[in-house]
Length: 328
Image 1: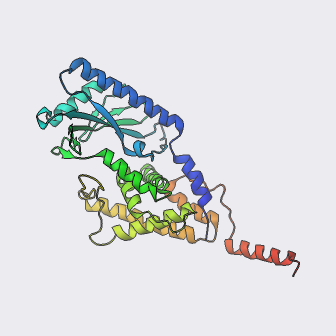
Image 2 (image 1 turned 30 degrees about the vertical axis):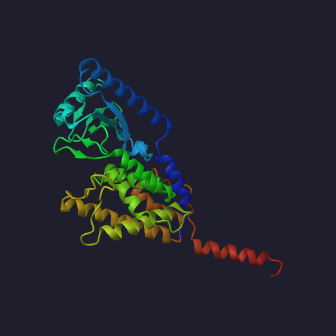
Image 3 (image 1 turned 180 degrees about the vertical axis):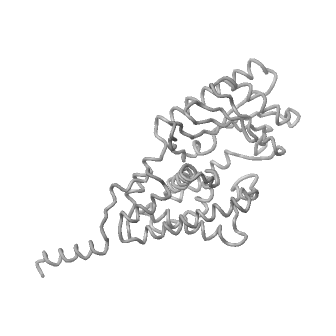
């Protein structure tokens, strides 16, 4: 079998968010938090003052270095929840009120105007990255906060609970974060190279945790292949195209997928799984590497892969040992 573990290790180093990018995001997050706090303190001092809690890939440690596009922009993000904690439901305003106030707080923070999206207020930065600000209301003492989604009623949704769930998953799944990063890098490359939008990173994170398979704990390429096999086998079964949020509210995140979107994802996943099997079963390391590269792009380098038939190399090695043996 072709062993591409070394190439996966190098790829992981290339896609894992570097320290400078993480520090930049932390700095931008702090500046936004300060701005929102000051806005509410100075303009709405009689209202509940906001608190904050990070969520998403930044919070669980799976954020990636982005692919830089042709004009030098890099699309990556951070999610930072804005929480309003009151003594009772009577203190809760309409959903749009919260969106309007948070939008007003961050408007003018960057040159590009923010976006008031359904599930958050988005702050855009000149280099292409953004910070999403989902908004929550929580009655003090209640277990779960409620998300202010403009197209839905108030609904319980707990980012903290999800973070805890994912940390528990990582406790006995040694390379789960690496597999999540690889799946998200696949999504980024396919979207960049072929303009195909695969499921979001949140869904891929849940799928990775649900289907993580560690038959060979020493090789990332084998773990990746086995995880893809498990995922594709399950999702392609009739009635099994499901990805439930593992915490409140527990909805199926594929529920509103169109037939076209579902079939596109399943088709891409099937191709990825089949080439992953071919890569691992290949007798040539470089040939195997090039199969992986189709799904990850040039950042998955094959420069260190050997263009040698494994069987022929092993026979040559065995012959050399026999020739040099004192018992020959």
